[in-house]
Image (spheres, rainbow, N blue to C red):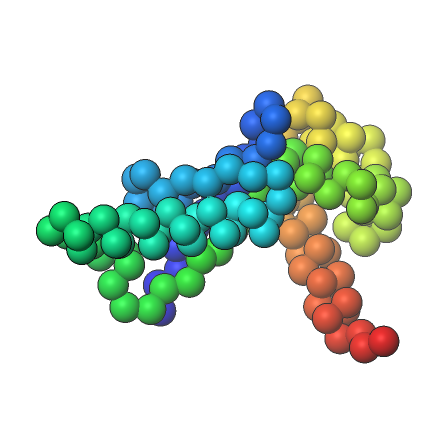
Length: 134
């Protein structure tokens, strides 16, 4: 199964996304769910148009594929600012709050190791939350 990458970025008023491997697949929205739905709709419209007008369907959409969503650290921190405090993120990542503020404001971009540290901590938190039943 192929994995196609959807890049999500912050814009002035909301978030925009594009499919890295295929030009023309784009979406906008104020939530991840709206962006996911928009990307899927954009893919479906492209495939339908190719079929209707005799165009070649991009090879990326032949067979099974999955979508992986990727966000830069600044966009992620802004998107979840109402959910995660910098203090809370410091506790689960080990990255001090001052650094997190720099990343969130765009003053500084994190080194790849810091991005991985943040991603790993959030994935671990997600796994812990998925294991909880109420």
